[in-house]
Image (cartoon, rainbow, N blue to C red; front, side):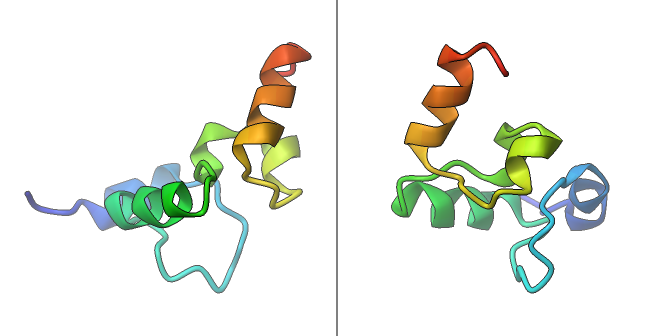
Length: 67
Protein backbone atom coordinates (compact mmCIF):
# COMPACT_ATOMS: atom_id res chain seq x y z
CA UNK A 1 0.00 0.00 0.00
CA UNK A 2 1.32 3.40 -0.93
CA UNK A 3 1.51 5.96 1.88
CA UNK A 4 -0.22 9.24 1.07
CA UNK A 5 1.90 11.26 3.48
CA UNK A 6 1.35 14.67 1.86
CA UNK A 7 -2.43 14.19 1.81
CA UNK A 8 -2.40 12.83 5.38
CA UNK A 9 -0.39 15.79 6.69
CA UNK A 10 -3.05 18.20 5.47
CA UNK A 11 -5.55 16.49 7.81
CA UNK A 12 -3.17 15.88 10.72
CA UNK A 13 -3.99 17.98 13.80
CA UNK A 14 -0.95 16.87 15.81
CA UNK A 15 0.72 19.92 17.36
CA UNK A 16 3.78 18.03 18.62
CA UNK A 17 6.35 19.60 16.29
CA UNK A 18 9.27 17.17 16.59
CA UNK A 19 6.97 14.25 15.67
CA UNK A 20 8.58 12.10 12.98
CA UNK A 21 5.32 10.26 12.30
CA UNK A 22 3.25 13.16 10.92
CA UNK A 23 1.46 12.00 7.83
CA UNK A 24 2.50 8.39 8.43
CA UNK A 25 -0.78 7.26 9.93
CA UNK A 26 0.04 3.55 10.17
CA UNK A 27 3.27 4.33 12.09
CA UNK A 28 1.50 6.88 14.28
CA UNK A 29 -1.32 4.51 15.23
CA UNK A 30 1.09 1.65 15.91
CA UNK A 31 3.22 3.90 18.15
CA UNK A 32 0.30 5.25 20.16
CA UNK A 33 -1.53 1.94 20.58
CA UNK A 34 1.66 0.38 21.96
CA UNK A 35 1.66 3.15 24.60
CA UNK A 36 -2.08 2.66 25.36
CA UNK A 37 -2.90 5.93 23.62
CA UNK A 38 -4.84 7.22 20.64
CA UNK A 39 -3.31 9.53 18.02
CA UNK A 40 -4.01 13.26 17.94
CA UNK A 41 -6.64 12.86 15.22
CA UNK A 42 -8.94 11.12 17.73
CA UNK A 43 -9.13 14.29 19.85
CA UNK A 44 -10.70 17.72 19.32
CA UNK A 45 -8.31 20.68 19.22
CA UNK A 46 -8.70 21.70 22.87
CA UNK A 47 -7.93 18.17 24.07
CA UNK A 48 -5.10 17.47 21.62
CA UNK A 49 -3.16 20.45 22.95
CA UNK A 50 -2.86 18.75 26.36
CA UNK A 51 -0.75 15.97 24.78
CA UNK A 52 -2.69 13.53 26.98
CA UNK A 53 -3.51 10.88 24.41
CA UNK A 54 -4.39 8.16 26.92
CA UNK A 55 -7.36 5.84 26.57
CA UNK A 56 -8.48 7.07 29.98
CA UNK A 57 -8.52 10.74 28.93
CA UNK A 58 -10.40 9.85 25.75
CA UNK A 59 -12.99 7.92 27.79
CA UNK A 60 -13.31 10.89 30.18
CA UNK A 61 -14.03 13.21 27.25
CA UNK A 62 -16.60 10.79 25.83
CA UNK A 63 -18.30 10.30 29.20
CA UNK A 64 -18.51 14.06 29.76
CA UNK A 65 -19.92 14.47 26.22
CA UNK A 66 -17.05 16.76 25.18
CA UNK A 67 -16.51 14.59 22.10
